[in-house]
Length: 223
Image (cartoon, rainbow, N blue to C red; front, side, top):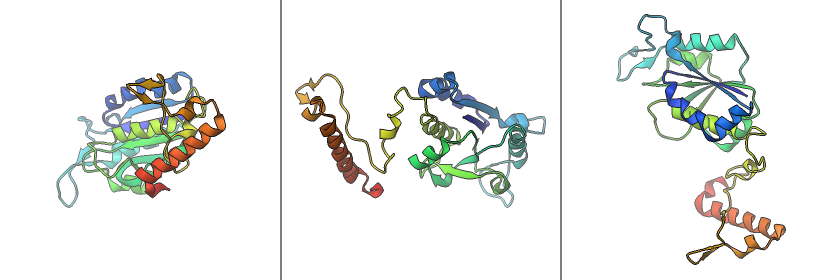
């Protein structure tokens, strides 16, 4: 999979993508991540990418021309499954969306800033708009990092144990069961006996019961 991210602050994303599972995916050749500075596509000597709103109002708006030139430049090289705008008023990211996108080949993400982007970009180029929650960030970079991580970890061969992702919270509209590791007893707090029994059937049943109970108590809305 290839992910191209359009941003005016590429350095914000270099750190998150240079560590952990995402770096492992890149090193294994399972994913490519390319950061593109929108300012490189500005057409004036000051590399300007924003301007005042028509009609007045507080906040600057990202201009259509440099963003569209960036998008079209990439489109000349390959076809994209999605061109995603990270925005607070998009559909809220969930596991189902991440699952779906992990099966794509080429994804482009656009990180907005200021008051937003010229609406004509959304009308004519954006194929999907995604939010990571009902709140506003200073820009789309952190949202792009979250979406990228959620997608890439699902690509076969990225995780050492490919079944791990299948048991994550929300995969079956249910939260994960509690997990424990060594020691079996710490400060008098003991691991449930069933997990030490070696009986796979009982362990599976216990985990399912615990997952259902946790979901009922914490997120009944997803049941």
